[in-house]
Image (cartoon, rainbow, N blue to C red; front, side, top):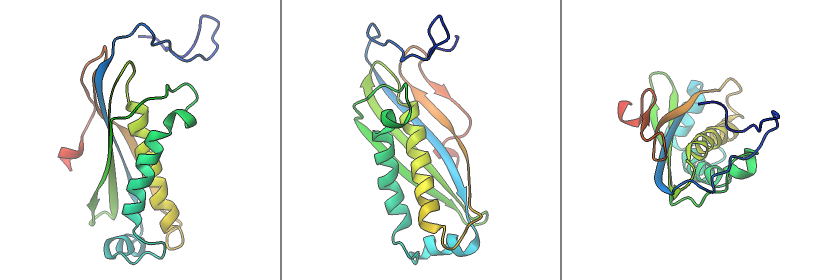
Length: 163
């Protein structure tokens, strides 16, 4: 399958989904942030100066997923039926893994919404902890799984059940 966001002249276009059938769609994305010991402990102990870091990051991730079409130029506006953001911590590596699952019934998938949710949640952690750690690293952001649409179910690497 070729790239779908370009017309025959090479100009960027929004994909026409008018003739597609609606299907139940779901996508889960993941990513992680690595922190220094002080920042990781502040999150663990709830002593970060800006408050409940992970609680705020959950809200930010959901808001980011809902506003994806405002950030990614060719994304369709989607009515999200559910969005869940959660974290799994790895104290040995001082990593926090973020997961975002988005659900809808529609003509196009929610992969971009899940990826945006993870990205915004991780950026929120960075913002709330930057006073104590300027060396944080965000990475490993990818689509774990998606269902629905013409391509059906896709499993890509590890998912939340593997952490």
